[in-house]
Image (cartoon, rainbow, N blue to C red; front, side, top):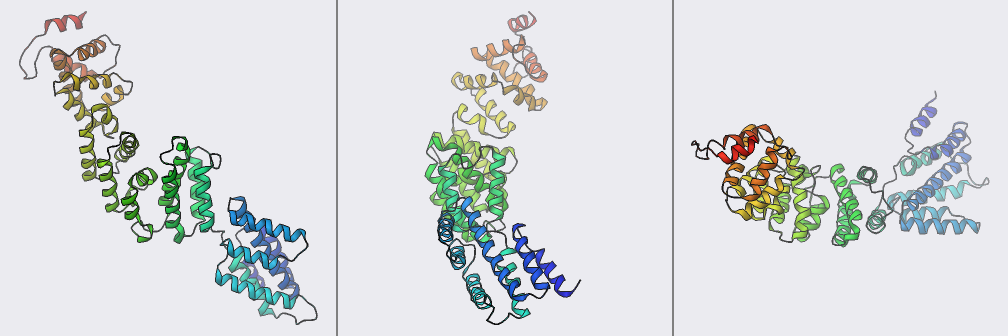
Length: 432
């Protein structure tokens, strides 16, 4: 293999898309056989055709500027007009090339005009190698990275067009990951702010629930995949959480990214949840924080702060949002030991739900046993709902762990002060 052949082979391996290899191979053939004028012209055509293909790809993905560019290019082609300059002008407008790239391509265009005519001078080998190398550097060797215009249009489409993305979470996350992979890291903060703005526009619209969920997964994937530290000022996270705490909590708080958030932002978000009093908003916020606790992501001091909020809520509003069966157990014990019927009622109703069996089975032996004794004490104190619950457990219509039953049984002979106290009626009813 000659030095030029090796050089061509190395360049070819850098080409991103297979479609671009067709014209590159023809260019290479002309170059290696020393048909330099033909090689130069073909290399120019390779650049222009690749740029046009990328404009069309942007258009297919929903970029409005690219769509307008495609229309203008096709109209010029229909009129048999030269479109080369139009294509690289529109490529710059679409963000496919930058100002420096544009200057280089404009120079190559001028050289192409010079070498295109046989009565003008023949390009030298170095000039041909220059345009071939630039074709790889400027276009063929580059991934098509998304620009601000595309990311803005994408965010708008997600928020306003229910059919734009599938509803399945995994597929939305796949789409998001691919988008982020094609977005320059410097644009990640811009994309974040654009997505969050769209969250704010539809967050209070019930009919937009699915679109809101898709925006949320895009934000989560952005934080998962970005290499830019989330403490970087370009994100403006503290500013956004200060001004739009609900939108931020709904938009991106998730166990997959929680560890990447700066502690200051975590503290602000949990403090916001604690201070929020809107019942409707709290349902979503409590679910999000519960998931952090269940996945063992929430720091202990922040968990304590969050639990202080739950302790102030009524039992039914709090019990399913602890994220910890141990904390849930202590809330149940607290309510039962209040010896107030109105506080005990929702606890017994909860223990009769389908999910209660799994919760009870998750408790250790001592907790099951103590809960059984406490339930028996509530029943002895005249609480009718607890009495009915115990009857259902005894006759087998409600499943309960054996250690909880043991606690109930022992309390038929021993009171809460651990003194002998036989409850004859209960024992007789249990035997029957």
